[in-house]
Amino acid sequence: SQQGEEDPQALSIQEGENATMNCSYKTSINNLQWYRQNSGRGLVHLILIRSNEREKHSGRLRVTLDTSKKSSSLLITASRAADTASYFCATDASGGYNKLIFGAGTRLAVHP
Amino acid sequence: SAVISQKPSRDICQRGTSLTIQCQVDSQVTMMFWYRQQPGQSLTLIATANQGSEATYESGFVIDKFPISRPNLTFSTLTVSNMSPEDSSIYLCSVSDRGRTEAFFGQGTRLTVV
Image: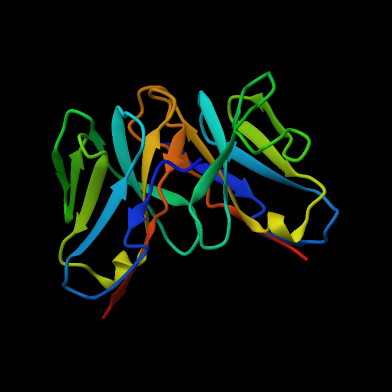
């Protein structure tokens, strides 16, 4: 079963703007991951944040984690048309083997 | 990292038939998983493919409908049996090892049942 919800379900912005996506989950976690999917193809790992971390950066990506609220957010700064994709959060149900439970996902459209 | 070859990339099948999807990894991996992604939806875990033993299925998925094989540490197949239009989805395999910070995914098989 899916771990939780993501909002918004869809987001449409202009190039250069920031995009923020939120994810909630239901169970306790060791880490939370974000993945990207282009046009219904394979997923690509973006970033992992551990349960004892509150914020993590990677390039134009910034992820936050609030374990008290069981929620995470992904911020993409200075978005580009190439960032157009679906973004999913995922939690590991297997204690380290990446048996992933995915959130509902956010479809991001970045317009030139 | 792991490179995954998933075949076929897409197929259109008649209802009542079966399709076998292959997942080949370029290195030995401990864990292999199969996911289903229904149109416009997120990914749902079907099962964990166990090397040399029966797969472990998630709630709502059964071996008769989704038989899985894993003869070695680099290869697995998922069969979608007795297909109906409701089986139209993208099916993805994923691999990982303990301690890895990420899972790697195949490019998916887009299945349409008519």
